[in-house]
Length: 98
Image 1: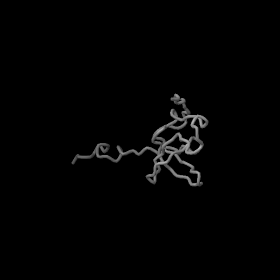
Image 2: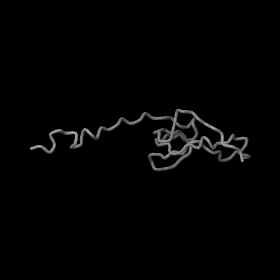
Image 3: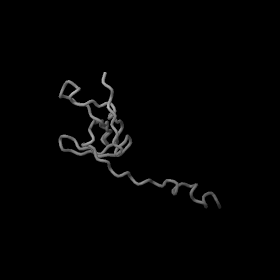
Image 4: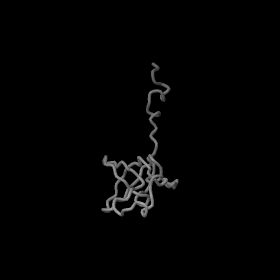
């Protein structure tokens, strides 16, 4: 068996919110759920040209699982953090006082 190749890019990682560009020209937002980069083999060692493996498993916001490669994925900016503590009763120093 061939050893998996080591792939590190540092740009994307599991959990990132991304936009994936599909072969049909559509674009969808989703979350990276798995990185198969360490298990990809060069195309010439597969012994076939059909159904090549892809690096990323992506859970689309539409609840569909798709697979794509680095060139098909663009990182989206992280959503701003929500400050839920400011809205909680514990954050109000007058809460519970008569």
